[in-house]
Image 1 (cartoon, rainbow, N blue to C red):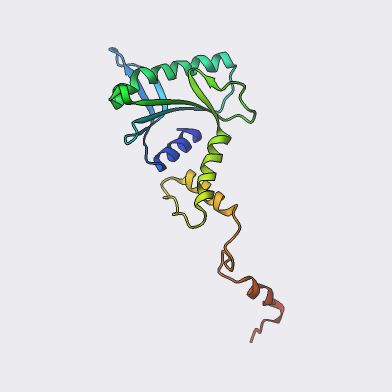
Image 2 (cartoon, rainbow, N blue to C red):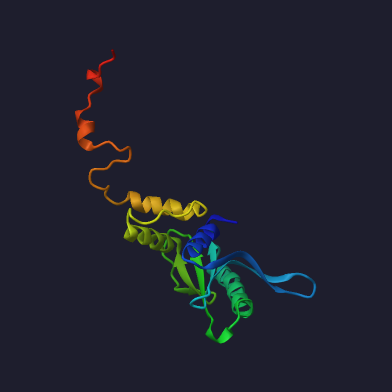
Length: 182
């Protein structure tokens, strides 16, 4: 399991989705599968399915397009059967791209393109809006918890409190040279 898959899994689980990673679909008569879907998230309340295909590498566009088209087509073909209620099931397909440059296409292989920077920004903004008063993220989501801590640290500290519990006034008044060693 790679980092991007884990980040996506944690974020969707945190939002209340049921998530599967490395979901093999299309079992053939010989026991082989048609395709592996990297991350599939399902929100049963809204009948919303999200298929996310993250990747770090940057093969030529035509190669990426063909690869993602195979995965997204397999998702369209099989996810309705996995989650049922085909007419009212909404499937969103996202190609999560971890590249420093902005993509030149808004879609690829039939799915929407999302940069990793967009995902991380969404996550951090969520926690910035909650502020320091927000509930801490469970430690079984370490990547999301780290982003929550980073978002909280970006905010100005609460007045009169420092991380060690010392007041700024007390710290300025303390002079270790004048401490009595008796």
